Image (spheres, helix red, strand yellow):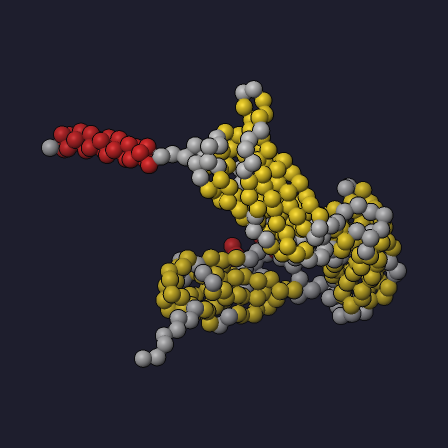
Length: 347
């Protein structure tokens, strides 16, 4: 016997149609799915689409009816933009798309901004790409701001250029981060094309050799080994090897203050961290004879350095099996009592 393979998908994968007010058209998608899946419409023009069915299961044909309004005023709340506007018809992992091609106006200059993450002291190469998608030539100039903590850290002025139809021009600026602090920076570009200004934004991070302890297990069950997780995040634009944590109990909160506990703790799993990556370090905590609020020291080791933090964690009493059993019996008796009352009422 040959192997039977389940193939999921949709055919055809896409349609393209030119935008026009009052457009009415039907599109047919043939779905093949193993399991029953609801149909979902995505995209800014989804309110102008109706489907012939609500879900698909196995092999089903879906008729998609598109009806656009007769007037632009009815599209005032829709994010309709020149170029390709997609309407997605989704069922599980299968996605069909209707591409609505909206023409560009006579004068239309687009802009895209990109700034990479680097470590402190390195140059940030900021690229501003301007493209003339309109039908007439344009004169363009640009200005770029680098902003940190709400203040403009540096400003760049681009030269005025002539941009013909379908032409593209790259403005390149270099931000030297030597005298700046690590953190998140935003970049804003102001592109003027003959009185029409477009503002585009991006951001970058200046890294430092550090690991952030962003989260950790807040509650542990008492009376044995319990899983303890620590979420760590690299603040460095390079890879780090052999990242792990040492966790130790350093005290317990009591009515009289903080008293030291016996030496309890664990070493976590060892991981590697990519640039700006987040991962979880996992270990198992022995909470025998410990209960209440405790203080833990978390020391995260990376590339010969250590990041430390003292945290508070609750060790809560584990519910014994006999309590669960007793709760079950109580529920059974309550159920029987309710049933007797219902039976008397009915009969």
